[in-house]
Image 1 (cartoon, helix red, strand yellow):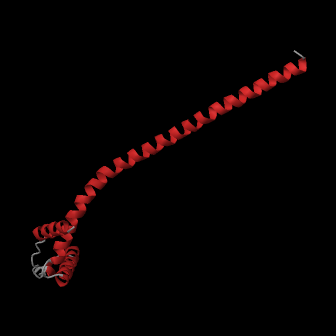
Image 2 (cartoon, rainbow, N blue to C red):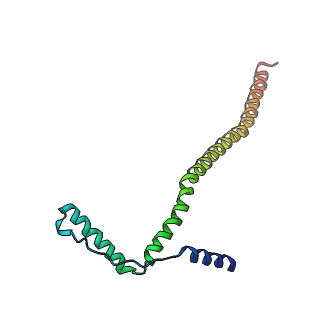
Image 3 (cartoon, rainbow, N blue to C red):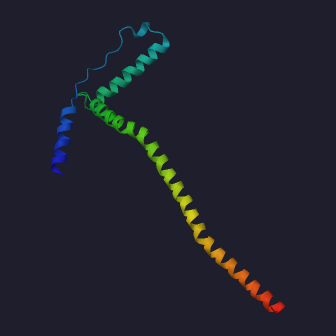
Amino acid sequence: METLLSKLGTFLRQHWQPKPIDPPQVDPELKKLDDLRRSAEVIRYSILSLEFWLSPLGRLREWVRLNGKVSAVLLVPALLVLPLITFIVRQVAQWLGLLLSISGKLIVLPLVVLIAAGVIMFTLVLFRAILGR
C-alpha cells in the first residue's frame, strides 16, 4: 500500500507544475469596441479576474488541467468499451433466457407425453372393459 501511495505522490509531483497567473489587463481600446465585443471583453476580464482572485499562483488552473487529463483518459475507454460490454452482457442474458425456456419445455415435454400415454392406455383399458374384449 505504501509503494502505491509513494508512486502516486511521485506521479503527482511530476505532473503538478502550477505557474503563477498574471493579473488580467483591460483592453486599452475597450471604449472603441462595438457593443458585442465590449461585452465579450468585459466577460473575459471578469472571468480572468475571478480566476486570479481564487488562485493567483495558478494552482486552480493546474488542478483543472490535471483532472481534465485524468477524466479524458477515463472517458475514452468508457465510451468505447462500455457499450461493447453492455451489448455482450445483454446478448448473454438473452441467450440464457432462451436456454432456460428451452430446458423448461424439455422437462415438461416428457411429463406431457407420459400423461398422454397414461390417458390413452386408460381409455383403451376402459373401452376393452366396456366392449367386453
